Image (tube, rainbow, N blue to C red; front, side, top):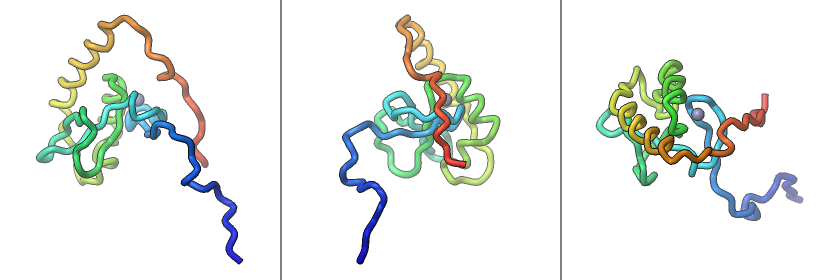
Length: 119
Ligand SMILES: [Zn+2]
């Protein structure tokens, strides 16, 4: 007699996958986050989200990049030893941020901090 009490994953509704920003640790749909991958040992934006291998997820905000750098979250998320140089990533992000803030529209949901982490 085998009975599983957990929810059946096959019956989940079609929602966007949710990831945790490696900077501020807030969970968000992948559509609101940038995927960061390692390209030849350097951090790079994976704008098409199709690069193979591990990815780290980050809000398109420099403050999140700062936080992620400070706690070396990229190395941890990407499972590599040692510090990673985020210089190229930072300039890419700055360009993106300019584009985002230039639109003038507010982005909802980014400050919604949900305490969903089980402790
Ligand atoms: Zn963030």
